Structure formats: structure tokens, C-alpha cells
Image 1: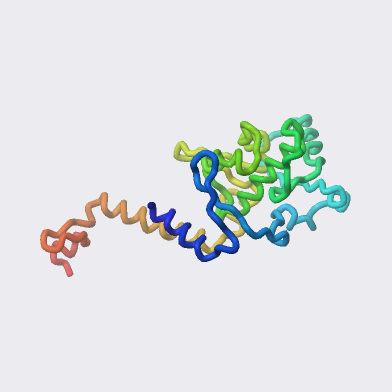
Image 2: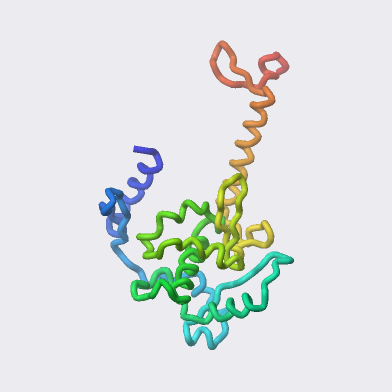
Length: 226
């Protein structure tokens, strides 16, 4: 058993009234929520409903924040389509969507809402694209559901750094700066910086193995400089 799997099982064992492991049809193990709390089943878009137009709130036609980089040109036809696409009712990630026709804008808006919420739940408001590829069945998504990332560049941004596709929530960033930084973001960045420095120091030969203790120590210690 991997360490990460052990930590998850240990954590779940502390909350038997909330979670339970279940066996899925594909021989995988899933996690079942035993106690549902409606007060927690509120998406970020719904929490920010005060920013919406009163008429839209009345019809539950919540609109997603849209933003484009400077110089990103949209044809007038695309602008009109985007306005019309925002008008259908918003279906929350936490609501039953089994009745939706996957060929409609309402269904597509629900898919966008799913990933809008999931990215909001991440620490850095982004995730690798492959991380969402297994969500088709658990979230009742249609085939090729990740096409919404390309169809809605004003909501999502696809980064392709280091040959890795990462889905980024546009509204969470001001250029490349995360607007609301979780404390863990700083911890991660400091840890990554320490690791990079360690690798660079090692590549420059600043660490050597001593024959006596078999530990890596700075080369200046080996040279008797301290």
C-alpha cells in the first residue's frame, strides 16, 4: 500500500459517519458520502450571486465571469453567441443533472460550472488536464467533455508549459499572479525553491560524499575550511 493511500484510509477511518469506501463496477474503490449537508452544497458562482443582475438572479441565469488577455480579439458574432450562451439557467455541480439533454447549451453550461467549481476548490485554481479525464462517469459528463476548455477561453486558460496541459481558472489570476493566495501556496513555492537550489548545488559539486560517515556534506567542510 502506498503512503498516500494509507494516509487517505487513515483519515477516512476517523469519520465513519461521513465517509465510506465502496467497490465500483470497474474493480476500483470509490468514496461515498454518507451525510449530505445542503448548506455546504453551494457553488462559488452562487456565493458570488450578489455580483449578478437582479433579473438573472430571479431566473437563475447566473453568468460566469469572463476575461480575455489584452489583444485577444473576438468577432462580433462570437460576442453575441457568448451573451446568448450565458442566458440559460445555471445548474449547480451539486444538483441532479440527469434530466439534462447533453446536446443543449444548458448542459454545456452545467459542464462549465462543474469545472469552474472544481478549480475554485483547488489551492492554486488550476490542475493538469489529465486529472479531470476520469471524471466522466462520477460526474455524469458527456463524451469529449473537456472540449469546453477550448470553447470558453474567457473562463479557462490552457497552459502548455513543459509539454503538460494545465487548466487554469482565468478569474482567479491577475496576469500571472494568483489573486487570493492560500497559505499553502507560499509553503509549496518555498519548498520547490529549496529543492531547485539543492539540485543546482549538487550539480555544481557543492556536496560530496565522505568516506567515513557516508553522508553528503558541503565541499568546504571536506577541504577543512571550517
